[in-house]
Image 1 (cartoon, rainbow, N blue to C red):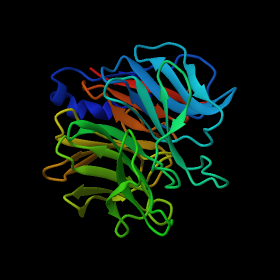
Image 2 (image 1 turned 120 degrees about the vertical axis):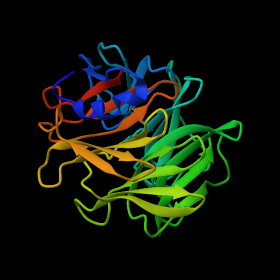
Image 3 (image 1 turned 180 degrees about the horizontal axis):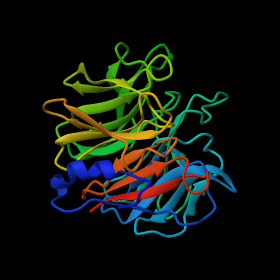
Image 4 (image 1 turned 45 degrees about the vertical axis):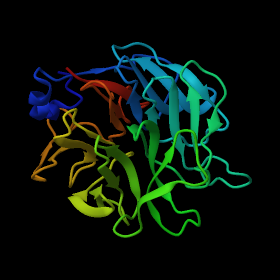
Length: 306
């Protein structure tokens, strides 16, 4: 197992029935400062948000390793953060909280074909400051869950909207106790887990939203550059990227969704000064994880799984 990342995932190896491995996927290419990464449905390709020679945008790399390549960069991207991939693997969806909406930078959810092509906005999600994102199958259609704020910007929350757009998103939960929700993971039954940066540094948490009721899962969380969150394939555990309580070094939180018992490990990740996005492939127990400080300071995307 790579000594820079996720020996802690051995604690959930039984979920997959085989040893967990972690290896760098990005092995070169012109990119820097990755934020979030998401696999395609079968885990063969990782897509990630970062900055390249043509500006901020989306990049790709083979999950088995290789150089990163640009998919789309520059306008309309400004500060792309969360990323997810459609169920058919053909479209990438990106939350950009600073993308232009008219004459103001109020955010967009942007989408682009994985093969390259025009970048367009999801209708109805403009002006919501979208930050974290996950695309799931729900009720026979693809739905985007995202973190952001209300239309008037007065409260933050978790919202959802069809990939084809709508007049406005539907609020899953907004306002107290959510303060600065960031990344989301959704069960097949529609339960939402969301990381929250909190009101001030080092005051993050993890919440569960079930049938409109918000309950606490992790009381205290020190988020890194992006508080990535994902579910184990059998949905028995929530995994969260975070920092150690008293050091600016990474750790992995593994939360049993039934008992809410939480384990934290620094083994293998304790030398990383930051931690970023985290997503699981829809059809496999394979994760993409961002080490925002690796690769000589420019960051790396890792393949984590069997």
